[in-house]
Length: 139
Image (cartoon, rainbow, N blue to C red):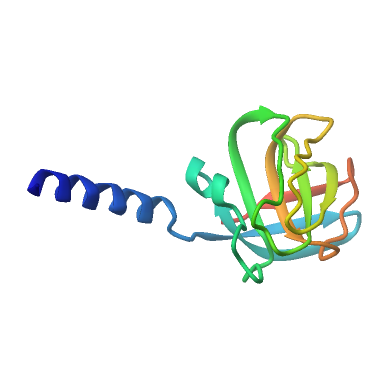
């Protein structure tokens, strides 16, 4: 019984550690306009799975998903109550595509091009231009 309790405690610790919130700064460069935003970092599988689900508001300017390699990652809005813009970024952090998504939609949407980073923001919050806007990760 003690072994089971220790094992369960260990897994709870791992989950809490994996979900620890980390906020970073991003610089958005679009033409001559520059702005800084603060976003939560989703840099492990558990954070990427949960994303912005179950929230009534974002709490920061968004969430940056960081993946190990570029791919056509799909997103849906299961248990997500906030309308979002999903901004897909290339490996060199250029905006490839923006897909707007409605709350609680089960439709999975994927970009046309490969993305290594994906930025979720409240719908309409950022003005970005695919192919022209660059995002710099500041930490």
